[in-house]
Length: 148
Image (cartoon, rainbow, N blue to C red):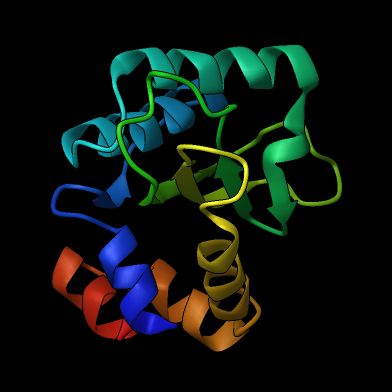
């Protein structure tokens, strides 16, 4: 599981204690990290923001955790993840699970290629202690160590 997550989080895909003042900036950070790791183009980041604007805060999948994504498209270069911990939690408009401290970006080349990855991610996210340690991480190396 951990190997899968570390492989999905390519170089440049992790931002620790990032600053965002709202949900849009949070999604843009996750999208930018996908771009930096050569998983997507800027068009995908725009699509994630548009999906949120159209469909609302459905991306907030658990207390404090958002899974930023959009439909597979030509803007996706490869399947992968980005991970952004926020220095200050941000409201997304999801009354049950706000505010968000962890934004995970997901890019998928099709509707099936990310199933195994999502399974590994959900297994990790169900471990409250690991998620809390992730949120306390001070740098990328601490995040990588935690995911191993």
